[in-house]
Picture 1 (cartoon, helix red, strand yellow):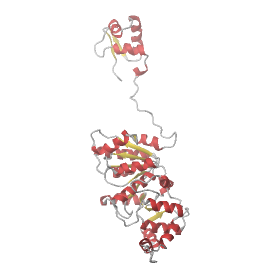
Picture 2 (tube, one colour):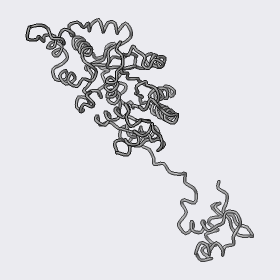
Picture 3 (tube, one colour):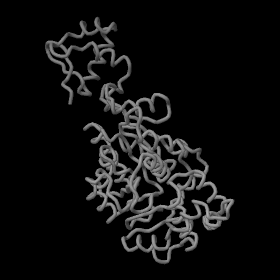
Picture 4 (cartoon, rainbow, N blue to C red):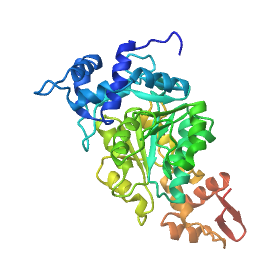
Length: 380
């Protein structure tokens, strides 16, 4: 990253301090920082006094923070704090400023803590693949296949490193030698869930692990909800593979819709509880049905890219026959040969026309003639 454009140091330091002060996804903080700038907001909060002239609780807490030390300690652990103005700042995050808050969360992040060599700007064409933690084998297989297909075409895969669909998506992308990034609801120096430490370390070594929450912080329910908006904003579209009727994956899909990104869902068996939320997403028209990577890429790609031909059964030689020829062919028996006059009666056509038609069909290897009559030729 040497030589790359960087935000002013004072702006970064102020954003680190405010990032420690406020919960991730606080829409009020995002709004005022967007309007006044992080340095002005920090200085205003530091100067706050109550009626007795004493520093307010907010001012006291802010003064006790050590943002410069936070940055130095993070850097020693290979963690950087990316903010607007940095060359690698993902432009898609800025779209959060115009999106309505959802469940009390909203606005662009003050910055992102990143562990890993991948510049976040390279996620501009990425796709989010999310879904249930309590996934079925069907869901795991589909998520892995989708992610692999997306990654093979050069698109990054973004997910949350959770059990079930998330981890299947990461592994699918890795299996295809593609790019994949995890967005966490805790500090990037923590492994959550703990059993995914090896996966997260691998992503940090080769790609990136990202969080809005400062290093050392634990995950909470609210932080998961705040995290979901980042997954949606970092991606061109979100695919939901299995989600119950109350699911964090559906929250991510709602954020994608608010950001005018593509929202997609993979159908499951109609009796499947893990797919209830996805089916409602599709039934309501809030998401587009996809079943393979090609469907996803057509929706998130640039105009004219990854166009998908409608699926059709393979064309057979008889499909191009004129209607009268098909009428005769339908009257020809499969096993026991029939004479021309019997075929003519069955087809409801004249004998002369049927005989000439049978000769044409024989020339195309669709029927076989013998002394006993005519029968269908075996399928090639």
